[in-house]
Image 1: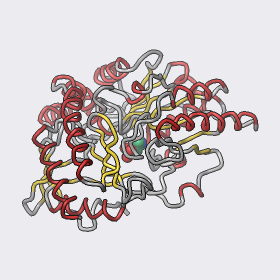
Image 2: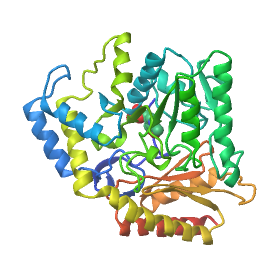
Image 3: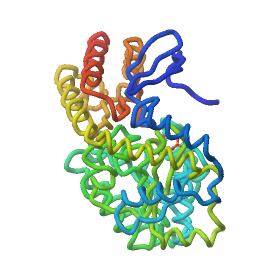
Length: 412
Ligand SMILES: Cc1ncc(COP(=O)(O)O)c(C=O)c1O
């Protein structure tokens, strides 16, 4: 039941920095692995985790320094009043817990989510996942406590360009209508930069306006930073900074452990304390000594190797080169994104924006033949999502662009 990338997936057995190697001796440039921001097989993580495995790995009801240090380091990355950390093992768990925290703290059971979203596979994180690419029945089968608002996509949505400000007004209206019907939402959840829709920045002021409406009616706001946070966007460590807002609850995972299972929910003490009304929080391996050491080492390496800076430098170069390709290949409708989270959107017609999913799939297969791992995203599966390890260098960015140029030329 576990699905793969590709109809005929290569058997990948090794990784090094932003490269992967298969058992039949091929090397690939990895343009999708946002779970390994430091790059594959990072020696510092390997040494730290091995050392900790030799010393102690146990459940988090014991008291040890690493869990405290890691939690403090995480909290220090967030603005006040976000100072209280729950450690879990994955993004789905983090979103599930965030939804439970919001429901627990507000006593309200309705949640507003964006369409075209993916937030995880557990009951609550799946309930707020609305992407029809992941689940064709998603919109017809949400539980009645989940209310969806339009995917605020300024490129291909119902409101484009300057008109994209209408998305916030519509989402605010949904919140007001729910409140008027006695179902004011306990939470609004969204990615803070729309990764799942293809690395699309939310319209200016979108989160500020929607968060204000949700809070006016006593609800809490959740920023899912699982894909876009942790320095990947280059200019911002967290996606919500790009929107100039501070959420009530932040979910993080993927990048945190460089592939080791690790996730977190960070909120204010006031919200966290309400969790006690629902029981107590315990996750056997969430924040274990090994997980905490992995998390600390990732933060140290991100800082020491200036990988957020690298996301700006290489990401800016890569985006400019991709925009250059767009001038020559009409199939490229737009290049979205920031830092090292980019999306190349493929369309059959730049006026109608008819999506090109078959062409996108064909390109991904051809790119694999040519030694590059890249995959589609979005409800139409027509956006190449580009989210490589943050150590990717300029030479790799050039190789990627040249290979895409070749594959696009052959496609024509
Ligand atoms: C935005 C977002 N939220 C949550 C998740 C779920 O994370 P995990 O796969 O670690 O459970 C994902 C996974 O792709 C994601 O992209």
